[in-house]
Amino acid sequence: MQQLNWPPKTSKQKLYYALTAAVIVLCIAGGMIWNGHRQTKVVTEEVTAVQTAVINTAGMAQEYTYSGEVRGRYESRLAFQVNGKIIKRFVEIGSTVRAGDALLQIDSKDLQQLVNSNSAQVYGAESQLKLAESNLNRYKQLYEHGVVSRAVLDQFENQYDAAVAATRQTSAQLSAGENQLDYSTLYADHSGVISNINVEAGQVVSAGQPVMTLVQDGEWEVEISVPENRIDELRKLPQIKVAFWALPNVSADGTVREIAPMADPLTRTYKVRISLINPSPEIKLGMTASVTLMGIEAQLSATIPLSAVYQNGDTPCVWVITDDTVTLRPIQTGKFGNGTVQVVAGLQPGDRIVTAGVHKLSEGQKVKLGGDSL
Image: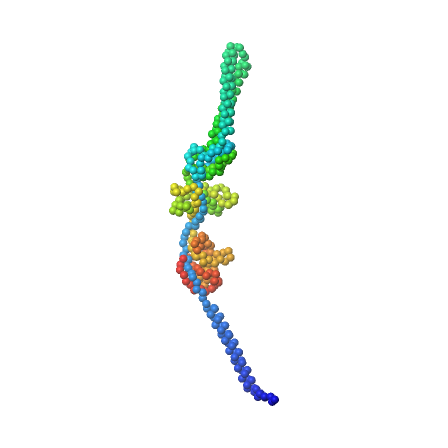
């Protein structure tokens, strides 16, 4: 079989192919460089549109609100003065009583026996006194007639004095026993309302054991607990407002009457009593009260949306726009509202801040403005 012999390539053909390949490579490289240049230019020129707002601060008094309870100024913890078993209870929690009304009664059988015994001793002492008095009168006559000596008369005078003393002693014991018998019934010493009862019929109580609490008629107060760093401010407050959870349309003015000298060992707060000025008759004991303490110094503040706050570690911040560039600025927050937060430091009137999309921004980024004033 005969082989085909291709004509040999000339030097011109080789040069042509080499130049063609070089041109193709240069075109591809140039296209890639041009595309990369175009993409970089697009990213650099991109500007983010953000929603903004202008700060408009206003002066307002700093205020603090504490929860409390309506209490009576005078609350007496009543107790029996004798031991015994309770047999009757005449009142319930919330009962209105007058001074002298019976509240509780204990079994008085033993006390009655003690009174009977003391009464018998008084009778016996009085009999001895009569006998001593008769003997003394008789021996006085004998002494006047010279029948007996002075020493004998002195003896009967001493017997008479001892009988008088014994009579007084037994009479005092009888009075004490009668008092003990009277103590078997617990009476209200003032008019008021029974706010608490600690015992029931059939229970044995000891003398001095608190059995119920009587809130005396008169001044109503609200008791609150205040931290130690607010005590000095509390003494200088010009105004205190008291509202009531169960009475949304009722409020009252108050004044500080008493501040506890020591902090509570558990809560480390101080008990404060707020006297109510001209309280409404609708206010009842035990109601939940909200005490607002108005500050004496005004403070500039602004309210911003929560969406504007950027948390940088433990420090709240906002993005402030200057010359279409965002800068992160720390702020100090106050009270929180419904989707808002109060800023008490860190912003000035006229500052423009970003109110949405704060987590998509970076320091020094260019932005497009929009939004209204706060």
